[in-house]
Structures are given as structure tokens and as C-alpha cells.
Length: 436
Ligand SMILES: [Zn+2]
Image (tube, rainbow, N blue to C red):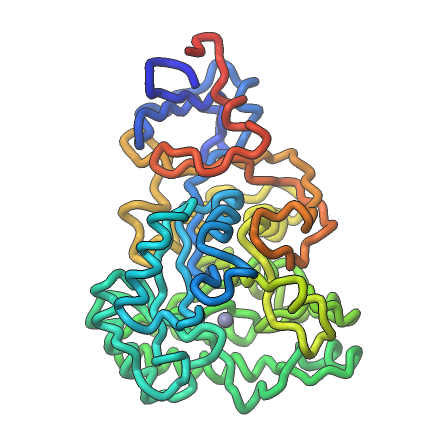
């Protein structure tokens, strides 16, 4: 720390990858951003608005051996996140206003980032009775989703979209036709042939997305498509947006980088829902993120204990960790070995997801004087090798174990409070001759 009491100066950091600046933080706010004269101190760290995750599974209540609100939000802070949306598939399911408030209260006691509850669309995720969406919205739910399962009944989805419209929220659909995907384990085609495992076809996703965008258009209720994984879904979302329908979409870091070729060895670390797809799908997803057809990156952070995940493929649960590795994975996917367009990274990982969730007043803000000091610092020359044994999540089921990434998040600040400072890098970048 340096400068007057209560003031921190980040020296020589590069907002959105631009020219080095000195960024002054006082209390909870940025008070000045000025061209840097001491470029060495900040080490050229990239300054981004802190990230916002639309799709996190924190597992509390109900499955605290795999993750808790405390451990999951610590992983979020280490990954550069200020805000996460906590999915409803806990035990018990977040399907009443009391359970929404319980998560808000637990987060206030234990969380390392802001937590925004997602309410279930149907009671118990059972797909039969609509949950009390209006009351949950009033209690603080910012979105509704049965994620983990699809809201298969179109009449129920229509009622949910109408409630979303009434309450100024949105419905996030896990698009998976139960009949077409029944028992599906790996991408249909080469992966299913190589492993002999039951196929999870692209049509299982695309048929639901095609139906649901029509329902969003008809009701005017906002629909968000979770974890888009196929080139065909991209085309449907593009068409829906061209009609002016209230549709947004997300893609996960793993679907932007990994392909179904990784599932040929049937290692359950690569088991995820929807499954890893083809290289052609990955290319289409990256292009859709660049052109805005896909609005945001969302992690689908899905912790599972080693005892459940280290299992035969069919017995192991679907899901991968995502929060700690999202930024380097997305930078790699969008940069293709070079520096990515950092403004684009900030748009798809912070500004737009904040807008989708209705959090633009506090998250995804510009990096300028007067704004909240809510940002993350990225080392652009970290050459960071991911080691699953060093995960700060309570679980370690990352598919990126052993992979080396050029970039790494080194510190996160939320409204002036340091929520992660890996290897003391924030302290280093605030050192200076006038240090107090
Ligand atoms: Zn899902």
C-alpha cells in the first residue's frame, strides 16, 4: 500500500490490455487512472473488470463434501470473479423464497464474492409444478433455471417465461430433450463409436432450443440458453436474435477449447453435460462469441468429489470445475496462441453477463475514476501449469490438469476489498517510492 492512508495505487497496469496506467483506489472506489511513469512495478499486468459467472454450482446446501459457498466462492475469487449466480440444484432445491434467502444469508457469512441465487423453475426440479417464481424474485432470485435437467413441458416453460417477464428476470434453460438424449454419455459420432458409449446427439440440444426461442418470442419473456455446445444451436440463436426475440446464450470455457477427441480414452474427468463436441462445433462457438451471437462465457463450474468422479465412465457424474481456469482458457481460445482482444474478453466474461443477470449497476463496470474498485489482474506471461492438487475448490475435477496456459489471474478486488492475491502479486504492483 502507498499514498495517503486508505489509498492504494496500482502502478503500471494495463486496463483492457492498453497502455500502462497508475490506478488509484480509495475506499471502495477507483479515484484516478493516469498514464504510468513507472511501468516496471505493475509488470504489465492486465487490468479487467472483475468477472461475472452466470452458471455456478456451489453445492451448498446438500453436497458440502464436493463444494461449499465458502470454497466455491474462494475458487471464484481466485479465478477473477466478483459475482456468481448459484444454480438451484442443491439439496433441498432452491425452490422457495425461504431457500433463496437462506443462500443469501449463508453467502453473507461465508462468501469471498457476491452470490446471486437462481431459483428453480419447477418445484424439486421435478418438471411438474411451477415453483413460486414471483415470490422468489421478490426474495432476491435473479434468474430461474432447472439446470441439470431440462424444463421439458412447453406449457410450463410458457408460464415461467411469463413470470420472468412480470418480474424483470429471465429463465435459463438446460436444453436437453430427455427422449432424444436418454442415457447419452458422449457426443454422437466418432466419440460414441470409439468408446462404445451411448450417444448424446446434437439434435437433443438443438430441438429444445428451436422450440424455446419460439416460446420466448411469443411470450416476450427473456430466455437464456445454458452451455450452447453445437454449431446448429448457434444458427438457431442467430435466427432468433434476427427476429428480435428476447434470447441470450452462454458458452462454457471447456466447450471453447476441448473437443470430443478427449473423450476417446473414457476418462471421467472429460465427462460433461452437454458433452464435448467436434472441432467444427468449437470453431462455430468461438465465432459466435466473437460476433455476439453468444453473449457470454459461463463456467458451469460443477464440483464432484474424487470418490464419485474417479469411477467407471457410466457411474461417474457429469461435470467439470471451471472457475479457477476460465480466464486463461478463454484467453487461449480467443487469442489462439497470441494475446487475445482483452476488450472482448471483458465484454463476454464481465460486462455482458452482468447485463444478462441485471447486475450492471455493480458489476462489469468501466475501469475509470468514480467507478467501484471491482477488478481483476491478469499476468500475461505466467505460463501457468494447472495442478489439480492445488485447486482451492473443495473438489479437483478439472479437465485442464497438466495443461500450461500463458495467462493467469493473480489478484481480484471487489469494491476495494482484496478477495484474492496469489503469491502477493497485488502487493508487488502497489509498491513504490512513496510507499507508506
Ligand atoms: Zn446444465
